[in-house]
Amino acid sequence: MNTSTFERPYVVSWNLTYRCNLACEHCYLDAGGSPLVQSEAFADRGELDTDGCRKVVDDIAQFAPEALTILTGGEPLLRRDILEIIRYANGKKLWVVVGTNGVSITPTLADLLKKEGVRGLALSLDALDAERHDGFRAIQGAWKNTVRGARILHERGLPFIVQTTVGSHNLTQLDGIADFAYDEMGASVWNLYFLVQTGRGEFVSDITPQQYDDVLAQLSQIQQRYRGKMLVNAKCAPHYVKQLYAEDPDSPFIKSYAGGAGACPAGTHYMGIRPNGDVTPCPYLPVFGGNLKHSTLTELWNTSEPFVRIRERNDLDGRCGACEFNGLCGGCRARAYGVTGDYLAEDPLCSHVPGTYPDAAQRVTPGIEYGSAETTEIEWDDAARERMRRIPAFVRGMVTRAVESHCVKQGIARVTVDELERIRSRMPTPKIFGRAPDPE
Image (cartoon, rainbow, N blue to C red):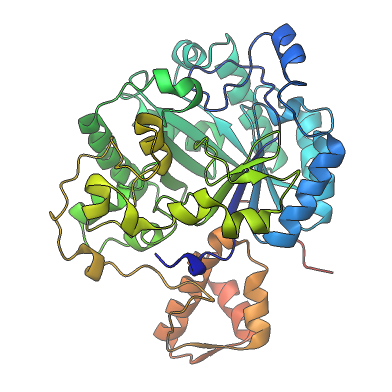
């Protein structure tokens, strides 16, 4: 990979706090615990105060204003200044999403979050029944409160993602959880996460590579079933592109995963910020390029060792380095580190034998994104180009490809603002988290 390709991240995941009202056994941040332990410990762990958080917001707005900014934890809603942080970030025109367990959502809080500029939320649901979910989250009543919170958000018109971590506790429930997320909760997106062995999760990995492959095959069927209704994604599973290719090399889902959206995004399209200001290529990867108390995001993204090295896919070891899906997948870098201590090692959960599909890299051409070195037959007016920049980076490539595909089919050689509006009136556009306000 050419490191100069990655000018800015698409997503910034910012852990605001170690505080949590759950005690999930797989938590990568090792958050939560008893209230007494938490109150004594967090001062020592150096959480940024409100002024420090404002400075981070300023840094994100300067470096990656189009990125999706995820405020998560721990449980971010436990911060007394959470609404102030959201309000400040919204004032800087950032796209703000809150990652929460959902147990503390009330109608009043939902209204306040919407008022202050939250675009959407991400909730966790790990089973169809309370007993399994609560056992995984280690707090009785978590399932009931999360489902109630989702229904409140749906009633209040706040879109949300449902996130499920796959494990032995729910392997037989995945189809049902997807149906429940859509039918009973009203989710816009269902993300299936594959555990990364970091934090407390180091000790709870409990699915085999074969089970992993079986789940990916099942996920492909769920994705097809919900096409056009609810987005279905694999997370921390870049090998999903291999599953899609094995089923159908021409699958319409492949291009949305190949070369970016599905490949391991650590340090290429994604970065994490810890509560104390430490910056990492991935929230699940406890390797840090530096701290925002002493450096800027621009400096760390462009020059720090983990960000620079993790982009060198040709330097990956073992099967990942030799794999024909190297540039389309790359393996999970955080999982490699969690198991081996080396983020350039092969992903231990992948069962693929390199060379099985020798033509894959040539046959699967990553989707062209606006501003890349690739060219198409379609020309863009400057005003139309600027309009596209208002779309958050994490979906801009998908929208651009849809616009250009439409223009090719309609024989339109040049994209203007007027043409964009006409296309928009006729075409479905991503509405995962609503539309950002126009710049002043």
